[in-house]
Length: 168
Image (cartoon, rainbow, N blue to C red; front, top):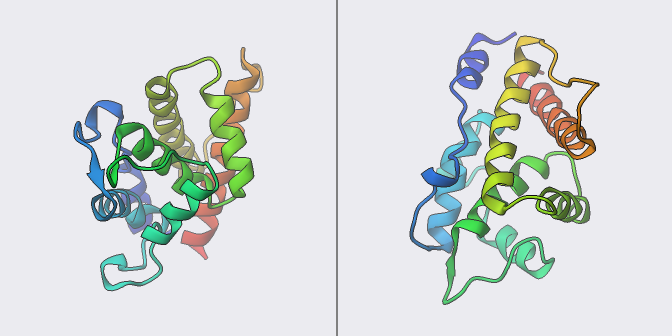
């Protein structure tokens, strides 16, 4: 295993709800925030500031709005809810289609607020990624909730994809 990647994964952190900006952001600010947080871990060998294989672009965000994955911006600004959904989309798009991501987001917020669902997503994804890179078990097959089992399975599949891309 590449030690550089292992060290990076151990420090991996997606900003939680309370860490997201409390003000609405413009498109460029959203792109920079998410790329700064995720690109080093999902695509560690690129430099998106030089335009190399960006994880998230303005065009992608516009497509997510057109496909109803996120709500349209108000006065060209994106809220905390939209930013949280974009973080989730950037992780999930490694493996899943836009329609599958939409369905997964809908399932996640059926019995939860966006804030709680987002924080659980971040925590579990960080755990899944660390477990994948350290070769530890992540899923408890006796999970008390079908939705929790689904979320862990989905995040583990994303972690496996990131592992494969980073170690080959």
